[in-house]
Structure formats: structure tokens, C-alpha cells
Image 1 (spheres, rainbow, N blue to C red):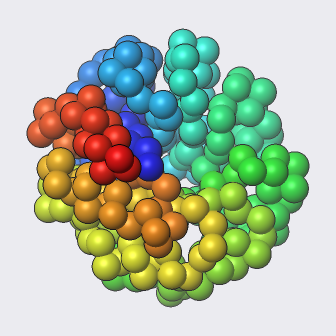
Image 2 (tube, rainbow, N blue to C red):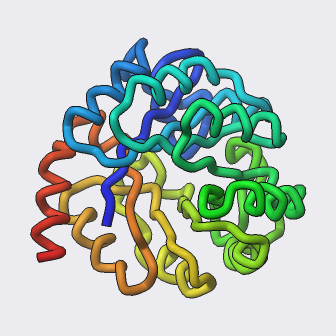
Image 3 (cartoon, one colour):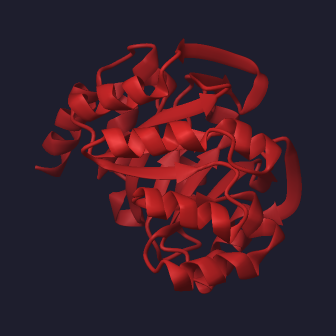
Length: 244
């Protein structure tokens, strides 16, 4: 079970959004590379980096910063946000990305996921963001009519190595994760799932760790760490204790 700090980049800065809304942001630092280094030093084994401008605009906008994060880190970096061409995917993997996350393109062009998964086996994750069980795309600006669980089954068949599942209603709200929606999503797939959205307290870390038997392999934590609701080290120790 992994606790994965998030570094979300918008306008070259490290930010957190509330429910993915671009106009509801909190800036936590002017240097995303330094922030990633901080989580590296705090004990993270994997860091989740998202180009929010890329997610909204449909192409990488903070790629140079992300490359610098990869170069500066001693741990694995998974990257998402605006990756909708093979060129963008190739560039991140050439820079040393551990895994890349495909979002909007998975719904719009499922064949692209299949092509990417064949080219980079075990390295392609699909980010599925849901509002009331339906898939949201383009930086969560639009909600489709596709059920998140249906897309999961389709993407598993296409070769996705895993999923990042986000319940948008809980993201950035500090209300705790929606464990039932995570459990329902996991029931639709046989590949590993990383839960995202809503982790607020150390008790939430324990609760998600309790879903390991359902296929959850980790959790992404953002606002709770930035607001110092708890320290990454505390969460990692709790996970170790839970596993023991």
C-alpha cells in the first residue's frame, strides 16, 4: 500500500484545486521541483505529478518543470495531464517517467490506450474521474454519459496496467474519501487501483488501506499534506503498522 503525494502544477506553480475547478485554487509554492524534492526527502516512494494546464488545454504545458522534477528526484514519478498524443507520451518516458496517466483520451480514443499499452507495457495508467458515477473529462470541466465502471472494464481490455480513480465530489473538500464508490469501482476491474480524493485525516489513510483486498494498491494525498493535517511520515508509519 502506497501513500503518494501529489504535485499539481498550474501556471508554473504548485497548487491544489477544489473539485478540479480552475478558479478555486490555493497556491502552495512557486517551485514545484522543490516541492517534489520535499516529498522525496519525507520518504515518498512514488510522487504523482499533474500538469493541470495540460489537462484543461489538451497538451503538455508544464513539461519542462516536470522533466526537472524527474531529473531531480530519487524516487519514481508518475505523470498525467494533457497527454493525448504518442509524442507527448514518448517525451515523458524518454525523460524518465515511471508511469504515465491517460485521462480524457481514454474516453475519446480508446484505441490510443491500446496502442500506448502495447508500446509501454505495464507503464500506462488510466485516470478515471467520476462525478455521481459518470466519467468527467477535460480537467473535470465536462461530465460524460459513460459510467466509470464501464470505462474501467473497457480500458482493462485495452491493456491498462492500473487505474487512478478519483471521486470528484470529495477532491479537495477535506470531507474524507467515498469508500463505497472506491469499492464499487474496484469491483469492475482486476487490475490495481489507486484511490484519489478526500483523504483528510490519518484515519482515512487506514480506511483506504483496508481496501487492499479489493484491489487498492495506494492512495494519492494532496491538500491534507499541504495543509499539514498530518505529515507524510505519519501516514507511512501508519501504513507500515497496518500491514504489520
